Image (cartoon, rainbow, N blue to C red; front, side):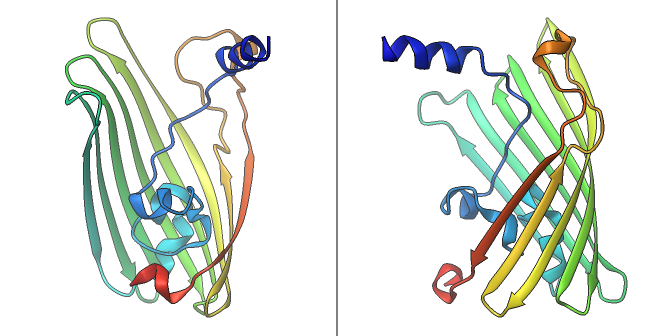
Length: 194
């Protein structure tokens, strides 16, 4: 009986977005909201404000169950010493020649005294099934990163502050305006970055 109840809850739970996290954040249980690095454009773009030089990263992960299921990502971060920083990330996940989820994010970060970092991100989401259907949406995120102490940060993210909708679903199965506040206190111990 319990199995049936859990199955029903999982089957009827709506899905609201794509979550792509870098390996460093996945290793910490996807808690990268309070961490500053080039991967910050995924969770909290305000973390790009701690970059001291231009940084780029790429990722490729074939799935262990099928060589056709793939995840690819590109991250770019560029600090502008007096103006803040900018970031770009592109994520692609899907089955080769069948379906694809694509997310591209362009972020601008403004830093105040090296202690407070704020960000605004514009996101493009695309879902396509080859030979069947394709749809896209736009969204925006706001981020804040506070450096409280050398090894203690506080991060906030407001996701999808715009009324975006992907595919034509019943209004009851998708929220037109979704505002999510995620807060995380991350203790940045030196052994995490060795």
